[in-house]
Amino acid sequence: MPDDRRSRLTPDERRAQLIALGVNFLADHPLDELTIDELARQAGVSRALLFHYFDTRQGMHRAVILTARDAMLQATAPRPELPPRERIDDTLLRFAAFVREHRGTFISLVRGIASGDQTVRELVDKSREINAAHLHDALSELGIPETRALTVALRAWVAFTEEVLVTLATQESADDAALVAFLGRTLDAVVDAAQVSTL
Image 1 (tube, rainbow, N blue to C red):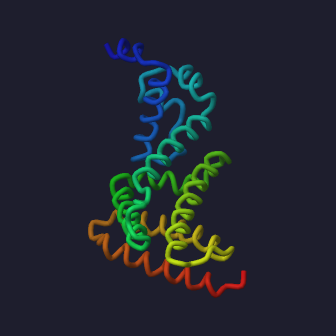
Image 2: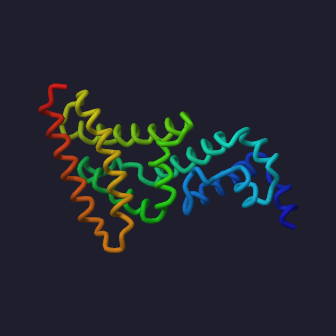
Image 3: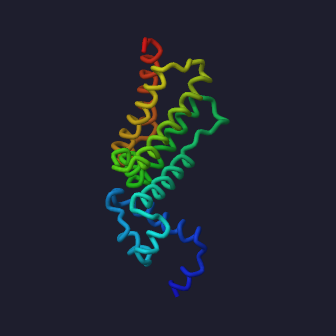
């Protein structure tokens, strides 16, 4: 019966199913442990089928990371109806919730920058660019001009925030309001330093 169900899947559905299994794998394992053999075992399909859909192990990793990254960006997208400062705080709150619910996946994403595959590194880095751009938008609404120093500082702050969330957001004693307040203060300090920089 399982084979019958699999045979009724369209190619796009089968590929999406395999990617979903890969994303779920990241909840408890690092990306490097996701092999063609492991995903084939979990899916109950042949290695040949995995190579048909992804060509290589790196291709499989790219598909899985892209899907996980887009899910994170969708879950934490800023709410444009909120005032800029509230928008930033609300986004951070939802980031903390996402990390708590998907810690393993989030770690694979933010540590994916260390992957040996250039495309995977670019996918992860792109999410940082997107989040830094969201910050630029909110700060510009507050009258803060965009400068080279601010651009560099915000990219660095996004990476810093990822590490803080990985370390603190999943602790049982974590206080989301206090965490957001701390990150907000560090953001203010970064913005202040960028504004007086001559870079």
